[in-house]
Image (cartoon, rainbow, N blue to C red; front, side):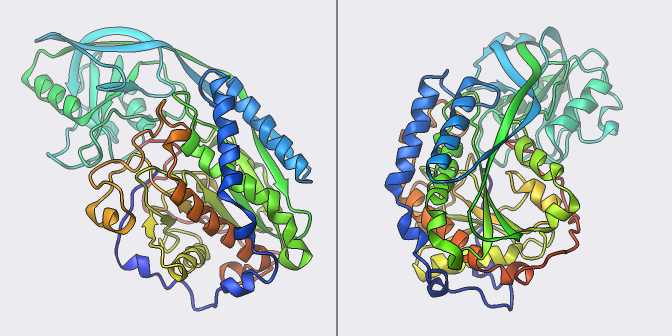
Length: 498
């Protein structure tokens, strides 16, 4: 779910402290060998079946998510765990019927839902025909920050539809500013520096006006017409916004210090559009297979307790992980040594991305997690690239709490570069996952080689930190100050928000 950059960061030297070696990590049974891709595939197939028999998805607040939760709980109990299901309330969104979008003047056109535009999560309902006005249009081929400041709407005509380019701040801010200026609907179109697809994302919570996201090509064409004068658009959305309940599933290893806990997480929910087998059945199934084998490391291999977590409502804006972290006391947070997060680990055209913990805004210790994973793959002569560490997945709330974090992903809607294609194979100029947040994210949407090698890295990191967190936090600190980092840019809030 993120972009990648190749450069000097790939040869990270994160810390002068020594990292436990592969030999040291395997003094107990080798967790990477205990966990097989066959085990992970079985879980993925079962998640696919659950989605197929429950409306085609596993979205939070729907039947497929409830059954997925029961499946994870049952598998954990069979493995000897005593899992906890942590419930929380959230804002549920559903499109009751497909949205419509078209041009009324100066010409007429009907735009195709899913190809030319999509509806933002938490969009309000409405049937609007009105003049359209462009808001602070950025220079050509730049992202800009259209609509991020109230001053951008100084000359906005009340009662018009706002045309705003994506970029610079979250969708919620742009929408709130537009509504405050008197907009009757908002059109936040794609920015030019990503694949020219409709914008799929969340407004973070219910709004009262229609909100849709066209492609950059369509959006920029509409801006030209609006600036020429006389552009009139029609937007119709039919949505449901209400309170529903989702949950997290938490389970801990039998052995290990409760004063130095390693939290290993992946989100369990999918988007409503499909089964979510790569996003994020891949991460869910990987850590479930690891959890089923982790207690085999015994007392000697589990010096630190491993707390496995399957987060709910990530696609609604990291709600499950946020609820979990916010429910902890300061003393409980201080006992978490680090968080490992795995969100999309098998993208068909993917890369092996390791979260860039060397980012200066990340809590101290995050770079050491990155180094453990990079060093592991370097020994296997498998390439890695740094993955943006921007809070876009469930590690975000841990970063905000000052807890070191790291993990692996293989990419979402971003475009693979020629250099990445040389390193990992696949097709340059194409998305890492063309089925991201789509109906086609099924069992056929899995890169089995990446899934297999990534599972090895996940298992190695879990086993390494179960034995020692020395490079991350100096081993077992019973109390430490959790300083909130000062990020240089707003964090993403799940899915695509900026």
